[in-house]
Image 1: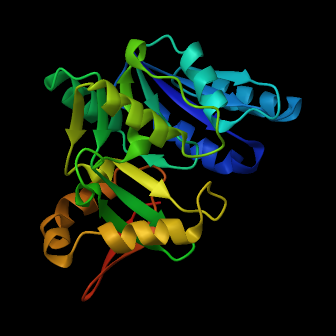
Image 2: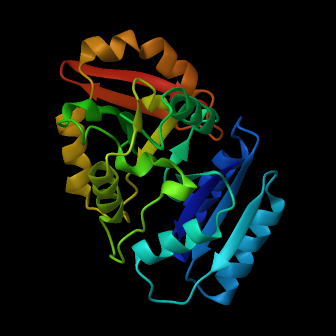
Length: 255
């Protein structure tokens, strides 16, 4: 069983619907989604209705207002019943094979924690997408921190801070010397979305892709698989432009 953990807020309800839909579409059967929020009663009731309409198991937990993001993440971990927990941010997108791929990599490595080493980075207002390679960071920080999959009984507590809590957890995992599975070349299974109301700024997101996006030769090598995998998202992304150093790719990812 994998318990996916989502912290959300009322302003992101449409994004939350997409993330819940992506959870429902996962090929890994044994899963649950824990949705934690500190919104009002009306928002709680709306989330419950969405959860009840979902074809997979979703539980909604309302928390008191004013808790930090780290504290809300801890509440989600405490409510989980799975052998594994997986961060499932409310404003990102997830391919149907995401959980199966990452769990397989963690199990094969006999690891306690797993992360992706690359990701797609989507800027819907510009219609632009990048494939970011976090292997350009120095080891052992060469992972996408928001893609955490972990054995629940090995999870450190999140610090009670408003942002950067996932960095602190990664540093604690490294301090302990925990075995980590690093899944490479599967960035198509996770889409990091910049929508304008993220925790981090537009410049932060743009700087990531400037520094880490795949160069044209590698992007072209992966083009066929990328087109196929993007077509498997429901709903899709529509017209996608993937800039690189000598031009761009144009991809129509079905709606």
